[in-house]
Structure formats: C-alpha cells, structure tokens
Length: 102
Image (cartoon, rainbow, N blue to C red; front, side):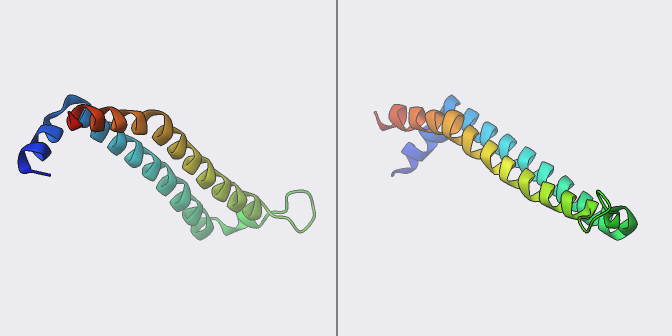
C-alpha cells in the first residue's frame, strides 16, 4: 500500500465514521464494565456486611448474587459488542474497503 492509498483511506468520510463509532462503542462499554467492577470492589471494601447477608436464610449471600451478576453483565456487554461489530462496524468496514479498492 502506498502512502497515497493510506491517505485516501484516512480522508474517506465513511472511514472517519467507522473510527468514531468504534471508539465510542469501545469507550462506552469499557466505562460501563469499569464502573460495575470497581463498584463491586468498593462495595466489598466498604460494606462487607451488606454482601454477607443471607438471601433467604440459607448459605447463599447477597455477595454471591452480586458477583454472579457482575459476570453475567460482562457476558452481556461482550454480546453487545459482537452484535454492534457485526451489524454496524463490519458493513461500514466492507464499504470503505470496496470503495477504496477502486
């Protein structure tokens, strides 16, 4: 690839849109996961008695439920990324690739 090819791709409006969308998606999902994870860690650090409470009088605690929810939310966020990448980013990437190959 020549420097002119790279320059034409970088100036392509769909490429700029692709970069913006990918960055926005990555940062929003990263921020969501960081807030959830560090919220859980801070809850463990500053309110362990809350997480130690029994859910129904048995051995299962609130902390176990919250921990499972953190893992499930991380899978959900991964699913959101895959869905958006396949349905929004990949078609835009293919469009840029086809138009710049001409």
